[in-house]
Amino acid sequence: MTEPAAAESGTLPGPAPGSPGSAAAVHRVRRRDPVPLGAGVCVAAVGALVLAAMNGSYLGLTVTTGVGFAIVTVGMVLQLGYSRQLAFSQSVFMGLGAYGMGVLETKYGFGSLESLLAVIGLALVTSLLIGAVVTRAPGLALALATLLMPLFVFQLATYSNWLGSFAGINGVLPLLTGADYTTTLVESGIACAVLLGIATAIVFRVIRSGVGLQLMAMAADERLGESLGISLRQRRLEVFVLGSVFAAVGGAAIASVQGIVTPDVLSETSEITLLLMVFVAGRRSIVGAIVGAVVIEYLATSTSFISTNLGIIEGIVLLVILIVEPDGVAGAIDRLLGRRTDQWAAMLRSRLPGGLLARGGKGGA
Image (cartoon, rainbow, N blue to C red; front, top):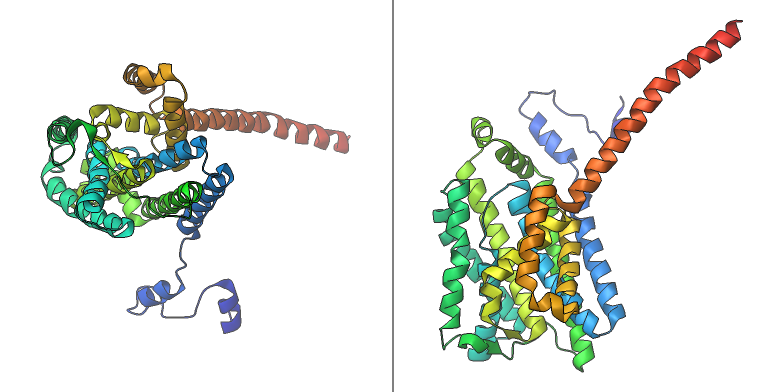
């Protein structure tokens, strides 16, 4: 192959495989994966267009709140879906983000952007400290340890006068402030959509990288992953930290949209709602997690019957989903399409050779 032809085909002449310079040559021609960035831009653009079209209506407020929840559930897809890390502390870090915004803005005079950056840093440090301890526990022990966290933190926030007790903290600033209420709601919604797009791009990047393959190997068999040289403790901690930071950012977005934060954001009911948003649509589907968050948030606020009996309804639905279809709607669709594809392939294999033989026999006659 000549040098121009090599350039057109996307390869460059270089040292033979195994030579010291071969790795550098491979690195030079390696192309970046466009899917994560494209997915993030698409999610942000679609979300921004939808919220701009709603023009600050009540439905727009509901959808924007759902987008805040979607930031949390996108991280849960990586945490619960791909790595199967049974950590149920997302509502705690969601509350950390919400209360962090409220405290910094109402008590210390921070702006919304400054508060968001501070919340990200606080969630990063806190999740590192907590994750360094809890992620050493095996699956069931990790689930029990993190399941108790919302109970403890909820009681702490409820009886803390500094955090506003039962009433919570009012006066949380929107992410962006416009000329009037409608403009503010639209611009804040677009800001939330951008944050969701960033979260989507990061999770897609992790899943489609070598780290994603390691997480899938760990989820399938931890002993196999360890035999392949994967640092289980490091990967567990990284997934826990990333999911916790996304939860804090989602909580900050929700508090900014609603203008108030109450202890309900920390409760076990919020954790069940998050699990429902992930498992109903599909715990391994990023698009499903986004759609599930928005739709369930809309249903939870659409009628008084659902909002009054939310805990009972969510518990029953989650139990049915886990028993009937653990992979949710996305898993059921994939399984159905897979069966149809297998049936069509079998049909073609059974009919096509016979048809060709029949034609061949007529031609010979």
